Image 1 (tube, one colour):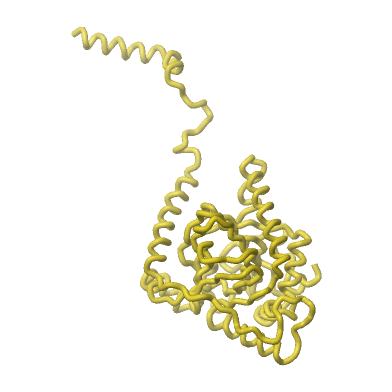
Image 2 (cartoon, rainbow, N blue to C red):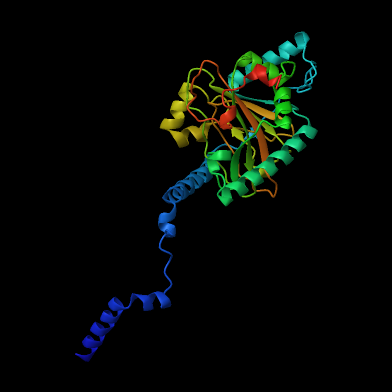
Length: 337
């Protein structure tokens, strides 16, 4: 009886004296959400990312080891010179050979599209830009979407939209010069009126994980985008070079990828773009590929641009470009920026 009365008295005290409880048990401020409710989107993404990391790890275990992505054998024309060196039958024949590889494999490597000096300046610029923009996001003066695009498996990885700075302008001019191998390919494949669709840098910091295999755009009858990834430093194996599945851009391949995902990947041939500084991989956006894990102590920065097929209004994926630059320039414009 005494025990029951004591319990009743204790309960009564608890009900009548909440201020005393708040003194002994600190409660969160009234308008501070609990961690569980603060960002359900982040929690959902965390669960999704965990599942994707697991899937990517499994893919890495059963996919065939990649072969190196080699460039065509050097010809008489030096790529990326930017001084009108591309002329004559040898240059045209080389251009046809590069275009043939792209149409067959959906990816082609071209070396020396930018000089090591330009790449070093670009790398310094983009890393500083990423750091500054992230500080703005962290301080609340800007949102993530103001400066960064969505990226698959974003931990230790970011997709930075670039401003049209003088250095970026001059780099675009070199890349689209029709007298260079890359510029010639762009003009021949998409035409001079192809719009600049993306202008960004993919930055993979140490600890970024392997991505799952994916195309950048869904299947469509024609090439929606041509994307050019340029290495701003040597990309060694431990830094997570991009792996491509040659020939995977076609309708049948996309159907197999959807319907028998693991089976398709087990059988697929793969190539890995261990690029030197200034080298690029140019690929059809329908080509299945993945970014590797950066297990090194170095940052991997890949400056990239995409140009859109002029016959397409929407390619099936939002572009990584600052909104004020979207739709403003085409390949021909890049030569006179």
